[in-house]
Image 1 (cartoon, rainbow, N blue to C red):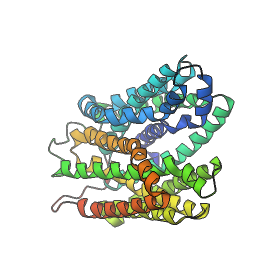
Image 2 (tube, helix red, strand yellow):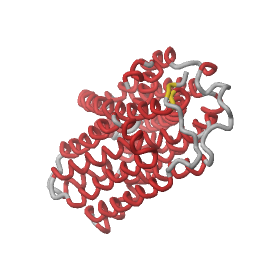
Image 3 (tube, rainbow, N blue to C red):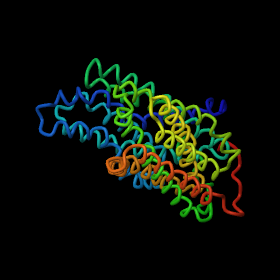
Image 4 (cartoon, rainbow, N blue to C red):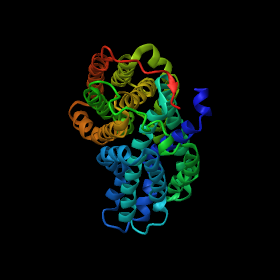
Amino acid sequence: MLTLIKDPRAIALLLAASLTILSNSLISPALPGIEARFAGEEDAALLTRLLVTAPSLMVAILAPFAGAMADRFGRRPQLLIGVALFAIAGTAGLYLPSLHYVLASRLLLGVSVAMIMTAQTALIGDYFSGQARGAFMGLQIAATNFGGLIFLVLAGWLAALSPLGPFVIYGIALVYLPVMLLALKRPGEAAAGPHHAVADGEAGWIATLALVVLLAGMCFVCFYLLPTQAPYFLATLGHPEPQAAGVLMGSMTLAGGIVSLFFARIRMRLGRAGTPALGFLFFASGFLLFSQASGLGLALVGSAFIGAGGGMLMPTFLGLAVEVAPAHRRGLAAGAITTSVFTGQFLSPFASTPLITSLGYPATFALTGGLLILLALVALAGLRPRRGAAAEPIQLAA
């Protein structure tokens, strides 16, 4: 991990990853103030809430196309253009005169995130391999978790000063851009250069990728039960105060960041099938604890288990996408994973709300835990390396 921290390419890619976590929740603390600012506009309440979900919807739709573009026209140029667009679209809320225009800028922000995520993930596959790639994936999730905590606290402070304050944070992309320009190799020097054979990648990689896409989508349908339902669930436990939900989310984020730091070691010991299986079992344990919770204490333990599972699963999904796909299709593979993740986020409330209405929170959480145990078995059986597949060398790409 120390070797990665000294690698300027790793630093640049970590900075790119840290931008993507800002796309949705960063403006959440300012939503009441934004709604009040544009209260005179028609449907202000609905449009304000759409500001949070609009980027996710665009990422889910456009990620496959962004991935294909990265393969066709180059990952480095797409990443740099995406970062510049992120700064422009993200800060647009500071000066746009209408809530409809601000919503349009959020859709454009989703376009930039799709470009950044697909190109950045593909570049990880180009620059790193084997154990170094696994270590980077874990470091990336840790950095985004811890960075997200810092940025959200800052957003809350800025929102207290002005409802438009959090939009300033998106300008950090302009600070990151020169670092990426200098640190990332030019297309002809990158690891995805002409020396890569078109036929590389794992035999049957499409089937493996399809399974990873399915598992990632189901993972985030379940995972987003926490941020979308936690405040209402905690209210049934006698903790309606916003601070309780914040502590719950903080517990999850902290646990995920800590576990992801050890992802490379876990992956070496458990392999590519055992690692996600354990991650799903941690997820299941968290939801089963939720189903038995009668107070905040057990709920906090459950959220930590869910965060720990996420610390194993997200780097696994991203790593497998670039591991099994041929080098010239890594952008497409990254786009497929990105789409599945954001589609799962978007669909989660539609799946969970009817269950909660009809069954209640404990039964819904118990059913979710059972589904996650089933997904653990699917991952364990379906993600085993194919016989005869060559082991990937443990090295950094030149």
